[in-house]
Image (cartoon, rainbow, N blue to C red; front, top):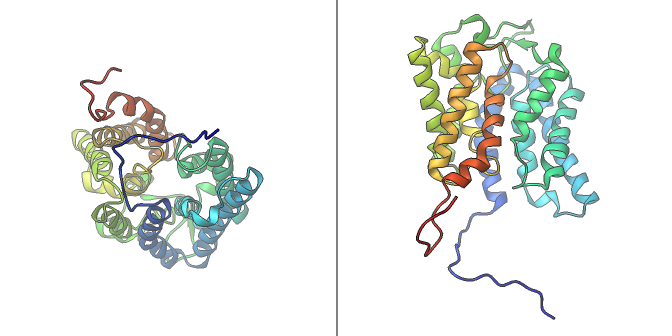
Length: 302
């Protein structure tokens, strides 16, 4: 007996494929990755190779154990590993970086079913776990082109000119400091249609409005703390962000407001990762409230 299920028309046709989308994300991350490697040298290069390689190895291992589709045909592990590396300090011990990257793939992604099924952004979850597990090493940064360790990042000291922040000439994580590279990658994703500008617009717009109402320097606030990186590369994740355009906009607005609130009124570290994860957990609600009208339907009931 034939048990094959045949769906009915209409059908949606698209040339997009997972590996094409992930490849575009990988290309978009390269400018800020290159800038981070130039600023921080060989330690940054080794750390990015470690997180990317450990992510791919962990995904390949899980795919073999559970007999899932091979990770070789899907670039999502490379993107996740590279994103995690860009969120980390350049001098973090490599074994800690590898543990965080592999753990994100195994626990957050693959144990939840793989690509398209994980509930929160793997890179955001990995950084938060590493922050609480290795607080000392995760808070050690370095001024670019020097060997002087420091804990004084612009977000804590309130220092840094617009130009230094834009080019990444300040202490911070490998990929969150060079705003020029982040903008290059983000604009590339928007122009190629890989991401909708709704989430980044909502994120940056709501955050800027909060900063303005609080009497803070809006431009300086946008250039610090990884806000640009989160807006373009974390709030736009296909799996953990809403499906509809209005849902994406509200998702971004929520991220911006939560990010500012955490930064302004609490002492919690890394407000952008916390904000993204909180909104990830609200994504099913946004999808349910703002789902599109089915073809031929009269109305939508919640």
